[in-house]
Image (cartoon, rainbow, N blue to C red; front, side, top):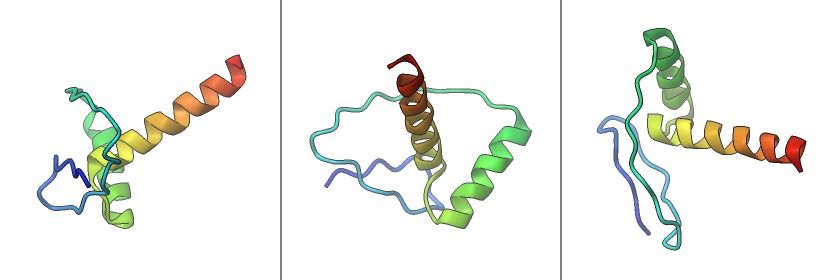
Length: 67
């Protein structure tokens, strides 16, 4: 299994071997970053995982509305 490690302090959830990924860089307001960081700590996952999960959920809902 391939594991993407963008954060040295939190464990990563593996990505499937069949998934292709692209790396991006984003800037966030400190308030948003701190909320995401706390969610990651609470769930014991990486910040990247929280962002991927949130984007996936957002895109699923958007697709349902535009369906």
